[in-house]
Length: 134
Image (spheres, rainbow, N blue to C red):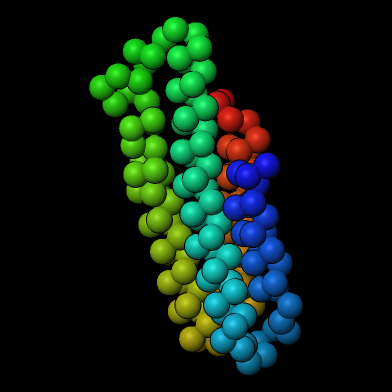
């Protein structure tokens, strides 16, 4: 149950960011909530990758085949680093795009960009947390 608290917090932050009228002046707390949802979903996705990698490692230990994880063949050694290398550039690009769109007055599109990328990260994390090793 502990692993789902990250996903729950990410989803709550995402839901709180979409209660705005199109092209209305956006309070700073809404922009902060959008960015918090995006970055918390990215962090949750990284944590989920590490969890799935560790589950695969434990499964291989039970099967008696830990050599699959030797010499960097698996993700137990660098699961967080590899996941961060993949997730953080996408999150940074979406965050910058959302910030730029907010500055240019495209408030709804900025919320859609942050919400879509954050939702993709949260969905990916949900699949990885629920499946474990796949």
